[in-house]
Length: 208
Figure 1 (cartoon, rainbow, N blue to C red):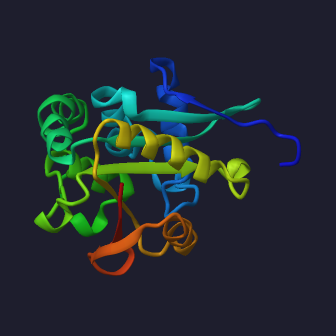
Figure 2: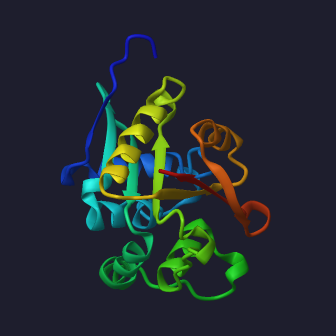
């Protein structure tokens, strides 16, 4: 939007709800996932909350006059992060959100996330060891197409490099062609495609 001023800054504890909101609004392969989830925090408990808790020094938000409209979240050492995710983050989430029961074919999107809390799926194969860090980046529509994604990525990658990272990877929905073009323009290369159909994920990596 012409004349809009955007500002990248370190994420603060009070920013959690707004970051969760961005996650929900971009959670359907980059589109609004509000209609899919009966629990608006369900996605954020996987893709936002643990990063703010475990590695707040690698959490950045994008802000304009309306408020927070994007984030870039990182983990320096993925193996260490996932251990903390399993040991320090998930137990309280599991306690608050019982696993779904009954026919899994009848589960909705939130049920599937609740199941994942109780049966976490972590994909970090040996082939990714040259890219030990990982990240998530999401922007609301009003912040897209104006260079903000590149600015946020540069901020996070610079911090990761300062902390000694040699490479970073990310996962995204394989159907999100716009995001794929964005990341490849920034020097990310395809590492793997995992899953099938609407559940298929694309993994990209970049050396630092």
